[in-house]
Every structure is written in structure tokens, then in C-alpha cells.
Amino acid sequence: MDGARSYTTPRASTNRSRRTSTRTPSRGPAGSARPLRADAAARGSSRRGAARASGCCGTIGAAASSRASSATPTRLLAELERLGLPAPPPVAARYAKDGLVYRADLLTVAIPGVQPLSARMGPDLPLAAWRNVGACIRRFHDAGVFHADLNAHNVLLDAADRVWLVDFDRGDRRAPGAWAQANLARLERSLVKVSAGRYRAEHWAALLEGYGRAR
Image 1: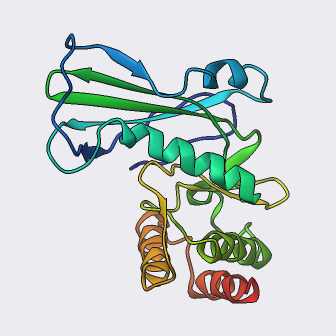
Image 2: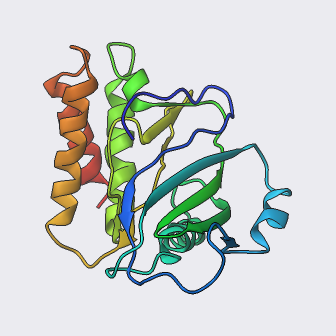
Image 3: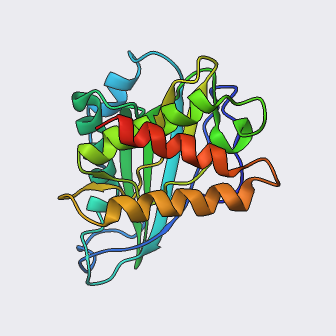
């Protein structure tokens, strides 16, 4: 998930991450593709907005189910939609195997008119928007939602400074624990890395204020 992305137009973008699967491949022709949710594409055609794609690839091994690599974020995003959390709903998912290598793709609804925090951060972004970011993250944490790659590119804001989180490829739900603070620390490291001098201490203080207010 390196590198800034533009979300000003509803075009699809692809993200890749390495994953290991939990079991050896089942017998069958190499290169066969297995759609995980046969009805998802039909439902997606009726959703508003264009779709946004993300994907992963890896080597099949003995640690976790390869088919779950795409099914798990699909189920998680559907659950986030049910909980009313600001994340893009899933449209479809696919798992494809080629020998000992697999690829999993996830298609989600694109959110119109948004930009990543990495592009919006700077003197023109009010402290209130940073508080909104903190409050949004707190909602996910209170619901036990772990985002494995919480960074400045995966926090989106629209023109009214409403906030969404995207790219839950390796996300899950967890019991309360130290992971929430580690999640925030990861985001702060990302802000420092991409800021090019646009990130200041008062920005993080405002984010933490919003995070605390959302209790």
C-alpha cells in the first residue's frame, strides 16, 4: 500500500500484499479460478458508484486457508456495513490458484469525491478534520476492528471532511487490547513519513482529541 493514490475519480486501483495460506492446494486444474461469492457481482451492479479493486497474491503453504484470504475481508466489510461504520461495501471477491501460487481479488464500491489524508494534510486542512479522523478511528476500535495497514493513504476525507477507512485486506475483529494503540502509532509513523513538512504536533494532538471524545 505504498505510494499516494488519487480518489478524485472513481477509477479502480489495485493493491498487493504477500499472504500465506493454511493448507495445501486441493486437486484440480492449475490456474482454475474460484469465485467466492457467486451472487456478489449481480448485487454490485445495483450499487451506487463505480467499483474499486484490491488484491493480494502469495504462496500456498500450511498456515491458513487460501480461499479465506479473499473471503475474510469480504465478510469483514459486509459486517462493517451492517454496523454502520464508514468503510466501502464489498461488491465481489475471487480466488484463483495456479499450482502453489494463488491470487485473491476484492472489489468494493468506490467512494465519490474523496482524497487520502496523505494528499489533504497541510495548512489548509482544519484541526476539526483531524478530530474527525480520530473520532472515526475510535469508532472502528470500539467495535473491535483491527486495520492491519492503517496509514495516511487509507484514511479518506471528502469535501465536508467526513472520514472513511479503506483497504481492509488483512483486517479482522479482536477483543480490546494493546493493538489499538499500536494501530495509532502505525498511523503516526505514516504521517511523519509522507508529510514532507506538512504534519505538525498540533495535528496529532487534534486527532487524539477526537479519538478521546468518541468514547
